[in-house]
Length: 462
Image 1: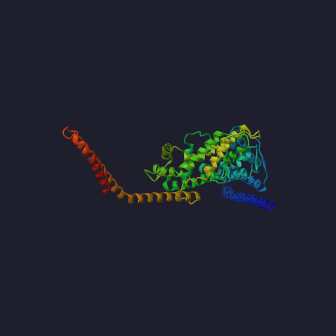
Image 2 (image 1 turned 90 degrees about the vertical axis):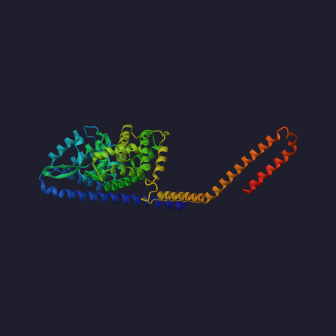
Image 3 (image 1 turned 45 degrees about the vertical axis):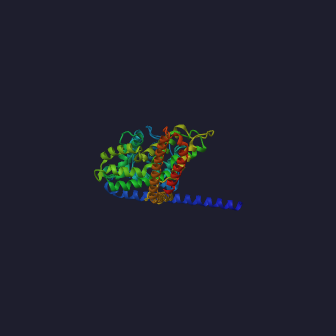
């Protein structure tokens, strides 16, 4: 027994070590791809401008952060921003300023950017390589500001499977010195997603994501991008994520970590996604492209309100809703603290059980597009039910002629019973006549017997 336990422990350690090695390998690969992208951006810029442009300064900051990742150094941050922002933006803003302060570029230009960003952090913008490197820094847990900073490693904006989605959807073109164009994602756009400063900000985000930043979205692009969106969101709910991990943690920890409202919203979002995805796709395709094969943002905006009302769900807004929910939860943790207290009974265990149940539910619900074990099982059950219904129909078809004959016999029996009742009543009336009353006792009993015998004979004959 001891030897078996020892072998199991060794096996667990080996698996943990291999997982760590895989994560480190993936991080190195991600870093290499970012470095290559950064080098591609630098080459044309150095030829067009003598003074450093925004993208050049960003590339210098990116290179500095990449060295930190390779050397596995830890960055300790202090808050230098003069404006209050959502927690994740606050940390990201301080991190960028920290990078600028350690930037080897021209001090005057860098100091001007630092001063501007400190007073108004919403002016901060990031290139694709800088944004990806910052995400990798958080995922590598090399940044420390307070006890909550570690949770940014699994925050939706910085996850390796959603980082590109956010950048490719939110980026804008910016002109630097020397008429150099660059794709930039700004704090303003990200903050609008959280604050919802405009009513249609989520609608515009989803349209850009599904249309791949095109002015119009065709039916084919919608179907392709919606399926990719479904796969991404399904992976998000199935794998480890920020809120699910905190739900599991709050079962064992304190009431300060526990927040019923956020857990309920997460469960509703997850349940809505799992239950209505394929039905929504059919309905949306029909409504969006009823009149034409493409639609612009205005048409998309009016149709999406109609569909969400009809379906009683907001499935296209699931990604921004989760983004907002995670941001709110981080702010909740910062405000309430996460220090250990006496354990208390809470309802987190309920949410954890429900989440685990929903995780096993496939969004395709047995459709032919999916070949997972759950969908295969649903298809087998459906086929079995169809076969059972088919056999019932066949049995009823065979029973049909017999049933018709039985109904005819029943009608004939009822008709004979009525005739016998009439005859019996007539005979009784006859023998009540004064002239025949004396003979009644001699005839009624034998006649009654004859009628009864006749009834049984008729029934047997039928």
